[in-house]
Length: 332
Image 1: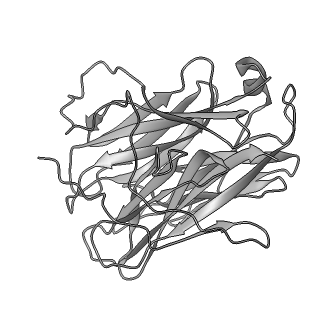
Image 2: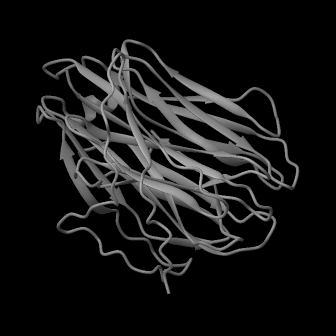
C-alpha cells in the first residue's frame, strides 16, 4: 500500500525581487488532462523503461515562453540511477528527483543534475549504512522560445559545472552565471568512493537583471567519507538570437515550518506572470542532521509549475525543515 507523506502545506513564501515582495501560493501539485495516473510503483529493476510521460505545459504572460514537464518510470534498486530525456523539439532546462518511501531506512539523494550532451535529467539515490531496496524516478523540464529553433536554442544554452575544491566530509560548490545571461535552472551531484556523500542543498538564485548562482552542499553521515560535489547552472542569453525581446528570470522562495523529526516537506506553486523552468531545495536541521530525499517539479496549483521538497533524518533523530525554490522566466 502506498503511504502518502506528501501532504504538508507551505507555511511561508516570498518572491525574491529587488525592492519588491510578492506572495507566492501554496498548494498540492495539480493535474492535467493526459497526465500519467499516480500509482503505487510495481516496476522491476529489469523492466524496459518507457516514457517520458508529459505532466503539464505552461507559458509566461506574453505567451512567447513555452515550458513543459515530463517524468519517467520508477526504477528499483538499492542504488538508483534514473534518467528523463526531454523529447525532440525541446531544450533541457530543469528537472528533479523523487523517491518512494517513508521508512526510517529510506533512501537519500546523491544527485539531481542536467546532462547537456544527452539532454537528459539524471537523478541518483541510495540506501545508507542499512541495506534497502527502493523506487526512484527522474523528472525533466523543457523550454521553447518563439522565433528560436530547438537546435539554435540548444546551441545558445550553457550547462556550467563547478566542482568543489579537494576532498572533504562536507563539500560545497557554487556555479555562477554571468550577467549577460539568465539562469534558468541548475542541479547538484555528490562524488564519492566510500560510504557516501549525501546532498542537503541543491538550489539556486536567479537574478532579474541577469546572472545567478546554483548551490550544492553535501556531507557524510554517521559513516565517515571524503568526497566532493559538483554544482551545475543552466543559462541562456538575456536576448537569445532569433527571439524578439529580452528575458528576465526570478526566484520564488518557500520556507517550511520546523516540524520535528522524520520526513518533513512542503508543496508550493509558481505564480503569474512567470513560467517555471526549474526547482531547488535544501534542508535545515538541528541534532544529528537531515538530508534531502526528494526535490522535484509539479504542475502546481496554478498550473504554471510548482515544487515538492522532502528531507529526513537517518538512523539518529534530527529535527528541522525543508525549503524550496522555483525559478521562473518571462519576457521583460
